[in-house]
Image (tube, rainbow, N blue to C red; front, side, top):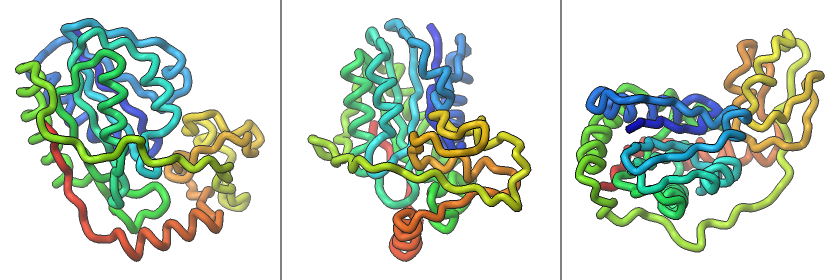
Length: 256
């Protein structure tokens, strides 16, 4: 048996939730435990095959109501072989739309038995004024409670009984070229943190845009000098709308 804690987490919020839920499983199973950080391109290049007795705790952020395309592509390569899974979606306090349903559907289609699922809130990638500082202490306690309930479901081997919100066909993904958050030359020390943080290797050695930006904000949140920020009018407009309409705190939801 092995426990795999798998996550895509450019800004670190999803990683916190997966780690907290996974900790409950680790303390109870005391088996071989493997963290799999899909944020790193090299990790997404490796196959991952499960066996029937294995357990997967999987988490991904919500981008526009869906899971990120790079995550979707990787999930399609997994071989579940009857392993049991827990699915987690982390969103920026607006809505998770079809993301959790899409995640559970993908895991099921790859041979996993999804026993539990949950949604949690993280600070929004576009503005720190929405979901500020989340997941916070209250969220982490909720993750503990979810982990205990999810573990019981995984042990029982029963699939999720509560209907997961969402629609099929899933929310349409609007294809558009994203502009990488520009760098402020006066603040930048050329430390390379943004290059290392980018999950799609979009930032060249000279800090130029390679045209693959997915708008994850890893380069913005990960810059120690605060030298990168969103300036694209479209992103700024979305951020303003979020600040005006999505300030009210939303709570985690469990589907068991």
